[in-house]
Image 1 (tube, one colour):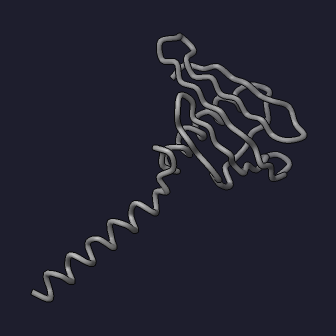
Image 2 (tube, rainbow, N blue to C red):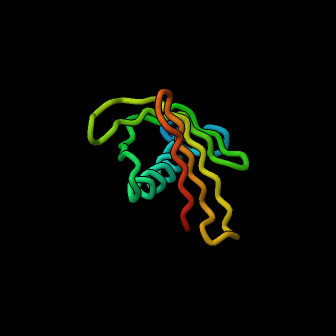
Length: 115
């Protein structure tokens, strides 16, 4: 009986740890947010915009758009920036993903691309 209770307790603790490691925030995990951000940053880098790598996803919420606050590192200058990101998916359009990157003290970059 004691081993069954111990097993149940350990199972619950493992489940909680797994959920917390994904940091589910407003219906989106940090892993899912990072995946969307990586795709959008690679599309942005195809143009004449700066290239960034992700340092951290601070906040992420998904309603009609995916809104994030992220820390990015400029791949060229290695400067760190705290930026706001908006990714809006409109799959019915030919270039249905609209990506907006807004970093303080810098330009606002927008890119529309297909999924």
